[in-house]
Amino acid sequence: MGIVMHQEHPVEAIIALGGNLGDVLLSFTGARAMLDAEDGIEVTASSLLYSSPPMGPQDQADYLNAVIAISTTLEPLTLLLRMQAIELHFGRQRGRRWGERTLDIDLIAHDDTQMQSHTLTLPHPGMQQRMFVLQPLCDIRPGWRHPANGKTARALLQHRINAGDTLLGGGKAW
Image (cartoon, rainbow, N blue to C red; front, top):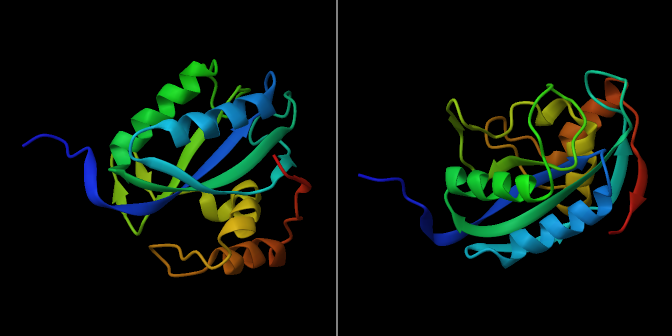
């Protein structure tokens, strides 16, 4: 039995984009267009573009961040491989954890899938603590529900605000 690459019916997936090296806006628009051109993927919504401080090492530029929603018939691991190919196309080099990058594409959620493997964990394990995911997610899907805890994106963002996190700057269309 091989890996199933396509599902019969499309589902919604949430994808986060980040970058702080080179022309990040060009990388974002190119990645969105490449995703939309893939068989089995249709981009359905794009958040505003935000600026956030880097996670981890602070000796790097601030990041630009956005979230997109897609409709897809691709299984999660197949979608991940397509996303990683797009990262490489835009010069992504893996190395230092939380280091500078031209483009980072993270699969945040794939319908209500809950999985954990050495390759992929869904929903993304860090999403609930990251303003740069939650704030743009609320732009496009404030009522989206976390598959594991049932909380909406709006409630998760409000929890971070109540914990002392501040809203991100930017908020520009792209």
